[in-house]
Amino acid sequence: MRNTIKKQIFDKNLNNNSHIDKLIKIGMALSSEKDINKLLEIMLDNVMEISNADAGSLYVLDKKKKQLNFKIVRNYSMNIRMGENDGNECVLPPVPLEINNEQNLKNVSSYVAIMGKSVNINDVYDVKGIFDLSGPKKYDAITGYRTKSMLVIPLKNHKNNIIGVLQLINSQDIETNEIINFSSYDEYLITSIASLAAVALTNAQLIQNLKELISAFITSMAAAIDEKSPYTGGHIRRVVDLSMLIAKAINKSDNQKFIDIVFNADELEELRIAAWMHDVGKMTVPEYLIDKATKLEKIIDRIDLVETRFQLIETLIQKDHLNEKIELLNKEGHIESHIKQLEKKFQLTVDSLRQDLNFIKSCNNTGDFMPEENIARIKKIGNKRYVFNNKSFPFLNDDEVENLCIQKGTLTDKERLIIENHAKVTQKITGELPFPDELSRVSEFASNHHERPDGKGYPNGFSGEQLAIQSRIIAIADIFEALTAKDRPYREPMNLSKAIKILEFMQKDNQIDRDIYELFMNAGIYKQYAKREIDPKQIDMEI
Image 1 (tube, rainbow, N blue to C red):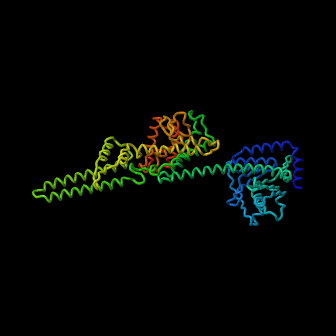
Image 2 (cartoon, rainbow, N blue to C red):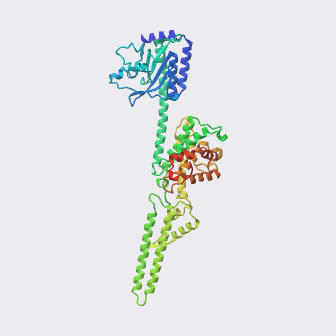
Image 3 (cartoon, helix red, strand yellow):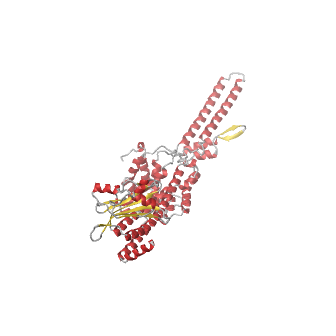
C-alpha cells in the first residue's frame, strides 16, 4: 500500500521535467565524485535546492565512538556555510548514539540514526512529548532565527546500515518564500537521492579506506626496514618529507624550467608512496652492512679478534725472548752485553707489533680516503707470520687485509654491490604490487633513486631523459638526508655547510639534477629541512 502511495506521488510530481533533469545531474555528480567531502557537499546542496530548504546539515556516523559527527552545515538566510571545503570546519559537538539511553531517542537526529526511520515535523514548536527540541529552540532564542519545518532522513548503504543522517530545515514556498511543510513528495524524492548518495558515499569511503590501508601498509613496511638498524630509524620518513617539500616547491615555482610541471593530487600521492618505498629492497641487505661502522665489522667488529691475535703474538714473542734469556744465563762468561742486546731486540719487536696494531685500529675506524702508502703497510703487516702449535699463520688473513685496504668508506666492492642490489630488489618487489593506474609508476620512481643524470648510477645506468623528475627528486632527498643525518655509525655528524658543498660538487659533476638543486637552494628548502630535522650543532651557516 505504502509503495502504491509513493508511486502515485512520484507519478504526479515527476511531470516536472526540471526535477528529472536535476535527478539525472545529481546521479551523475554523485557517481563521478570520489572526494568524500565534495560528495557530501553535492548531496546537501542539491537536496536543499530541490526541497527549497533554507537550512540543512549532514552528519556522518562514527561507529567506534558511537556518535554522529557534523560534516556540513548550511543556513542561507543567516549566511552560514560550514564544512571542510568551505574553509570553515564544523566545530559543533557530536551527537551521541547510545541505544539504551532514552535521552538519545528524544534527539531527532540520533533517533533517526538509531531507528533508521525518517522524521518529518511540520512545526518544531508544536511537537509534544515525542522529541526534545530544546536545541533548535535555544538556537532560535540566541540567533533570532525561527525553526519551523524539519525533515530528517537516514543515509543507508547497500547493506541497509546507517552511515549518516541528513537534516533539512524550513522548506520555503518558491513564489512567496513562506515557510511551509516538507511534502510527502519532498520526503520521497530526497530519500531516493539520499539512497543514491549513501551508495556513492560508501564507495568513496571504501576507496578511501583502501588508500589508507595501502598507505598504512607501506609506512609500516618502511618503518620495519628502518628499524633493522638503530641508526637509520626515521631515514625513510625524512626522505618522504623532503621529497614532498621539493615537489610542492616545483608546483609553486615560476622558473621557466618547471613552468610545464605541475603535480596534481594523484601525482603527489604517487611520489609520496614511491619515496616511502624507495628502500624496501634493503630488507634483503644484512644488518651489519647497513650499519657497517668500521672496515672489519661483520656480525661483530673483528678488530677485537685481531687485537686478541696480536696479544697472542706478543705472548709468543715474550715466551721466545724468555727462552733465549734462560739459555744465555746458563752459559759461562760475560753475558751482560748479550742480555742487553736481547732485551733491546725484544722491546723493539714488541713496540713494532704494538705500533702495527694501533695502525690497524686507526685504519679500521676511519672511512676517510686511504692513501697508497697505508694500503702498502697493511699488506706488509698481513704478510708477517707467527708460529703457534708448530703451525704458521699470517698476522692478518686475506679478508681482513681486503677490508682494511678499503680506500674510501667501510665497504668492500662486493659489499657495495650487495647494498646496491637493494635498488633491484625494490624494483622487483614494487613491480609485483598491483597499484591502480594513478599509482602505476611508483615502482619506476622508487627503484631509480640511485640513478644519475650522467648515467653512472644503478641499478640500470639510466641517464638524461630516461630519468623521471620524480626519481630525481627522491635522489636529492635521499642524498641530503644521508649527508645531514646525525646518527650514522660510520662518520661524525656532518655540518650543514659541508653537506651543501657536497651537493654543489655533485650537481657540477652531473651526478644530481642541476635544476632541482638550484630550486632546492633558491627556494630555501634546505633551510626548512634543517630547522626541522638537523641537530642545531650541525648548523654552521645562516638559515
